[in-house]
Structure formats: structure tokens, C-alpha cells
Length: 123
Image 1 (cartoon, one colour):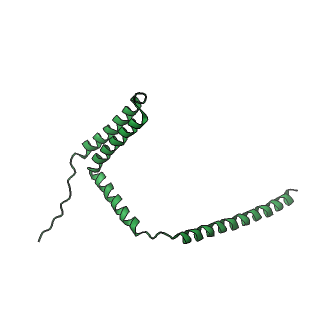
Image 2 (cartoon, rainbow, N blue to C red):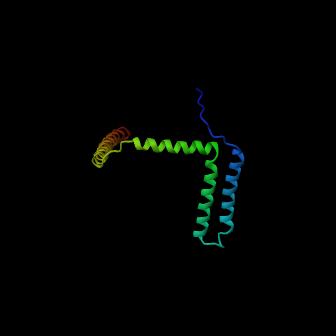
């Protein structure tokens, strides 16, 4: 029994990336060139559309597919995270504030003591 896993072949990746960069460059140039002729809304919509086309083409490459797989696995890992409840968050925040306040008092006291010692030494 021979099982083979068909992995997709990514052909012409270099050309696809060249097209992606050309689309981005054309959008950037067009946005600057038509800045006074068209309203901002139309230029933003055109840039979003060009960005979507460029992203679609980029996802058809090997690196794009790897990036998409990374995003999907990150989403799976995010579902595994156990987020703290509101009371836990409030308690932790309060503990941090208390510790910071205590540390500030200690440092203020040390500064005052060392300042007095230095003024006694200096005269």
C-alpha cells in the first residue's frame, strides 16, 4: 500500500510576486497622481480593491500558503487560551498597583535617606 500526499505545486512564484509588487506600485502611484482629481473615498476604495487582489495573488504562492497555514494554526491556538475572568483581572491589576506603590515608597525613602547622608557628607 502506497499512499502519497499530493502537495500543491507552486509554479511561477517569482512572476506572481512581481505582479503583486506591480499592483502595489500602480496603486501607490495612482493614489498620488489622482490625489486632486478624485475624492479620498474613491481612492481608498480603489486601494482596498487593489490590496485585496494583490493579497489573493500573494496567497497563491508557496510563501503565501505557508502564511495562511500559520494564521489558521494561530487561530486554533487562540481557541485553546484560557482567558481570565473579570474578577481575576481586577484582582491582578489591584495587586500590581499595590506592589508598584510599595516599591515607589521604598525607593522614595531610600532616595530621601541617601540624600540626607550625601548632604551630611558634602556639608
